[in-house]
Each structure stands twice: as structure tokens, then as C-alpha cells.
Image (cartoon, rainbow, N blue to C red; front, top):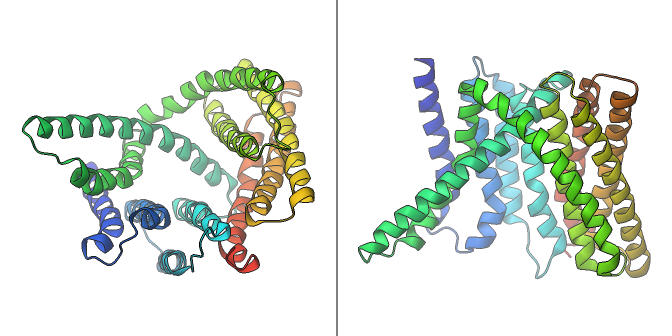
Length: 359
């Protein structure tokens, strides 16, 4: 009976998320398709997730509900009415950082606004690792189904690709994290085994890839100090590896002590720390040469933020592998650092467009 009720909550949340993203187009209220999705996809996804989690709780506090709803409404109004100047980097940065704010808000809803309990933040991180994996599986299955459906209709001379992708496809993408959350909540014995396996497989592979990449940088003649595109790739790689470290730590801690995994994570964190220092020095060099811009300032701030996080992670992983400290300490260090990302996202989203005058 509980599972059946949860299915109804799931369907309602998915329909709500789908309506939020498609209704303005169906009623002809917007014409800018790509720009509209960039602004509103994250709002629809996190609103759907928040509604599902809220409905799944035994009791919903009115104050928390009102605060959450107000933040969603204000975020939607702000991001959609933000003046867009041609080639405005500060506005584009606001679009890109709003999802991080909504992710933080969803985290508060997920942990019941209990900001004092670091263990609940760790649970939220573990959930995000499972969410990323299960969502990826759902999207792959959905892509296969979509290809099959479009192919079958093509066989009877009906071209439904545009209509299908613009309606069913986008709603499916929006709903996939909500469906993944339903699976995580109702089939924990299956999902709890996935994260440790992925962590044990991917951490060594990422470490090997990173070492090979760094070896081949010099003969390739690439230089983050003079090559802007390479510096961008360098920073994207840094963000990706940082995410893998965080989710690998939470995945590894589920199992009993694993020396190989812990050493792998320590070496990976150490190398990533060195990469971040190189990237940070390249950004400082470019700031000295070309001055401050919204993009350079945003990258500088995010790199400093990641540097601080990497230092805490590396120091704590050192204590794990050398001093035999429990890996739970690493998780607690990560959990305590999370609010800083939310504060930075708030600054970039709401302050940068004003600070740089919409440039």
C-alpha cells in the first residue's frame, strides 16, 4: 500500500515538473527555446524533486514549505526577467550557478532543514552519488526507447522526431531524477551496492587517466597560461575529478576499511590539488595580463573554493592512510564545507550581474 501511494506521489511530481517546463511553450508565452531551457530546466527538476521528497515525508512543516516555495518563485522570476545584454558573461554565469543554489535548497528540504546535523549532509551526498548513477541508467534506457519509437514510426512514413523530442523527450529528461529518487527510496538494497562498486572501479581508472594526461601535456605543447581554451578544459577536468573524489569517498565509506581504495583516493586528491594550484596560478597570470572579467573572476573564486576543499580532503585522507583515522572524518570535512559552495553560487548569481553591469 505504501509503495502504491509512493507511485502516485511519483506520477504527480513528474507531471508537475513536466508542466512547469512545457506549459509556457504550449500557451505561447515564450519563443526563445534554447534560452528558456537554460534558465528553467533546473528549476523544473528541483521543484519536482522537492515536491516528491516533501510528499514522502510523514510531516511537512508549514514554515519550511513557505520558505522553499518563495525561493523557487523568486528564483524563477529573477532568472527569467534578468536583463540579457548581447554576449553578457555575467548573466550567463547567473544561469549556470542558479542550479547550484537550487541543489542547495533541495538539500535543505531533503535533510528537513536540519543544518546542525553533519551526518544528514553526508546522507545527502551519498544520495546524490546514487542519484547520478541511477539517472544515467534511466537516461540510457530512455534514449534506447526513444530511438526505437522514432524508428518504428519512420517505418510507416511518420516523422515524429521533432514533436516527440520537444514534448515527450524533454519531459522524460526532466522526470528521470525524480524516478531515480523513487528507485533509491524504495529499493535501497539494490542502490546501496552500486556506489561502492562504481567508486572502486572508477577511482583507479581516473587516477591512471590523470597521470597519463599530465605526462602528455608537455610534449603536446599545451600551456594553460597562454591557451585560454586549454585552461577552460583544465578547469572542467578539475571539477569532474573533484566530484569523483567526493562521491568516491562517500561510496568507499559504505564498505569496511579498504586500504587500496583509500590510498587511491589520497593519491588522486594529491594530484588534483597540484592541478588546482597550476590552474590557479594560470588564472592569476591571466588576470594580471588582461584584467578582471566576469568569467575570470568566477573561475578564480571557484578555484580558490575548490582548493580549500581539496586541502581539507587531502589532509584528512592522509590521516586515514597513514594514521589509520576513519574515513568518516573525510566525509564530515566535506559536509562542513558544502555551505561555502552555496554562498559562492549566491554571489555569482545575484551579485555578478550588478557588479559587472550586465557585461
